[in-house]
Image (spheres, rainbow, N blue to C red):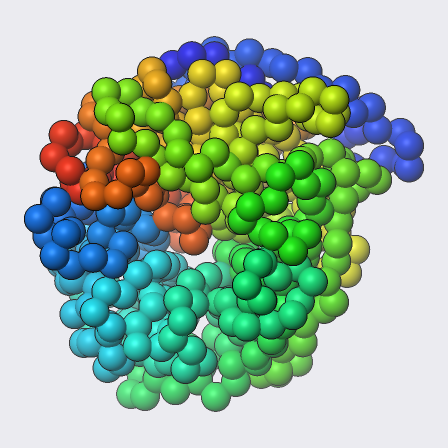
Length: 492
């Protein structure tokens, strides 16, 4: 792997994160990364997940068969991966316990699947001992398991009777389950086309069905910031008065295609009073440490990026949103994909790059209505593209970021970076290769869509919260439309 340049913000702060106005030195230092990772314990295990259907079946079925749209969760004994194809239950050793096609899974849960349901998400909510899966269907479906055994029964509901590709994002904490989708609206942080976010907060007790699954308190909030990712907070000590959060970014009216846009983070807290949830106003947060000024410049990812051994290119353009939001205590963690900033006169301290990259952020929301950036950085590669980065936070504060890399010198490969609680602020170590691609990713259209543009989760193991689980796409088959996924357990 070629050297990676990690852009670090040089500060004089420590863990207190207290930075007075004007005290931030925004000089960027490009630090070469040696690729050695953070030690042999980083990758606890990994095994292959679902694979693509192949050219003939993909041509016949359509939908999103050209990309896996994978997500994964674990409960201590089972691992569940959802893709645009299937819901697969694995043992912790990687043995397949049950496989169900996504349409059959939705139908068996008592709701109606459309011909090609897409964009699934999954979590295991340890506070109610239930698996939760979302996907598009006849409307917008939420399916919940009857017990902690994912091979057993499931029941489903329509979240909001909205059927136009809602992309239901999913989070939870000790108090509730949080969901978001897109619907028509006029929020100033909507994307082109007049859509905005619709947020939901359902009390945990109403998700733990025994005979009937019919939550009555959905706590719907319309016209919210688009692409608001609900946080996953696995803190067992959380009280009923502690807030949950949705996080997103400003769009400037053009979320997907903005160029040279000095974006800001947006955070919306959620607080509970019994079964009623209240949403805080949009907090618009500047992106440098201390949130005194804007540091990062968003550019639409390069629409078609090269890969080794094929004229077919990969389309990462939809990597324009936070892939997920992890929460530890009052701190939120996210990673955002971007295209390169190439104009040296306008890139400022961020510097110039040639390839797709990602930013990462830690937001200190100790004061829930006044979050501030406490750490941040840029990760880029001078040779290859980094796409669809997902971040996870272990219970001890150690972080991992997993992303795919592709370019003229490598086939699509899965990489991981780490940051431990003892590392210098604003730094990540890596990358370590989770698994290297051996073939280009090809399918019907050129460029071919890749990974899961609507979000990829990285979550803690509920039995051992120092471990993280995630999944991503790589390529290991020369057969068209035969994408590959990898499920990985990490100990950052």
